[in-house]
Length: 398
Image (cartoon, rainbow, N blue to C red; front, side, top):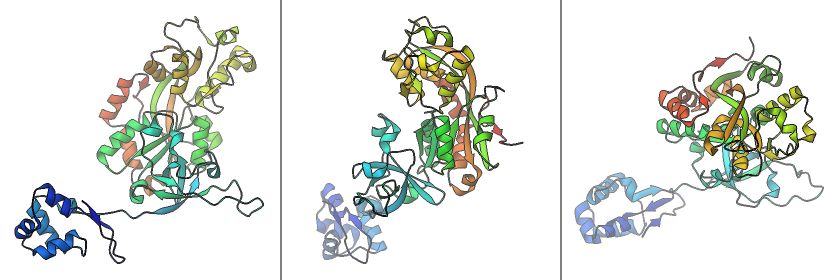
């Protein structure tokens, strides 16, 4: 049996003394004798009539062969925070109360997103930071707009732990592996990866909704990765750009290439079903560049408007036979057992506002993980990644 103290003037404490004593087959008299306290005092402590002094708590723990915290635990008090709903997610008033959410402290703001945005698998694998608190319905014509993104969250985890989480937007899922490596060094730190295409990731970074954005866009004119795109979309020079990996991008097709696809030109045959990425994704930009170079009209390609939200979504759709081809990375083809027709090599870079390096307690440690030998060795083993340039820093503007 466990009990809790509820004194107005004392912290909420879970009292496990009685349960621990009974588990060891001891009577109250036995425990009192072993711990050199009176039986009446032991009974009062078990009934939570008062909390024991430090010396008495140590005596009880010694008598039971355990730690003080095994007998008396502080119960975290329910904490509510005000947050801002991510602009990339459905407006909160349309969601059910108690929606499971992740919370990121970015600068001075708390950014809130539903856990379900992580995808169908991670929705059940990643614990929520809190639950959305129901808000009163917005009356028509009221001052509070239906587009208001201010929400309340009832936290399920310690706020101080949540504030160490790193929010990363991008389309490379191996960021979660980096998070696991980081957790081995800093137990309370986690990394949450939001699957967004390159353009959407950069926009989320500019809105101050994430700490890091991943991008892979090759400039059609110069053939240079990312920097021309970033120079057009980011102002100033207050960003650190670090290479995560090189990877190959190309056409993903079913094993054995049953549709006998050889190049982008084959997408115009009329009997080929494409699965595409959203506008602004690096794979979509590459596809549009190649279609233009081949003189193909995107509107004539079956499936051009059928959208997948990630490289793995593309690969799974082809593996399940719902599409014949899509543009993605070799690593996704490798994972789903697909054939791969290379189109180009691209660099996947991480963009970090320099202000976060000093303001966030874990981002520098996260970047150090990327260049560590064990992490690079494991990413190499996944297939489809070239880690030879990992950790290289690029200047946004010379």
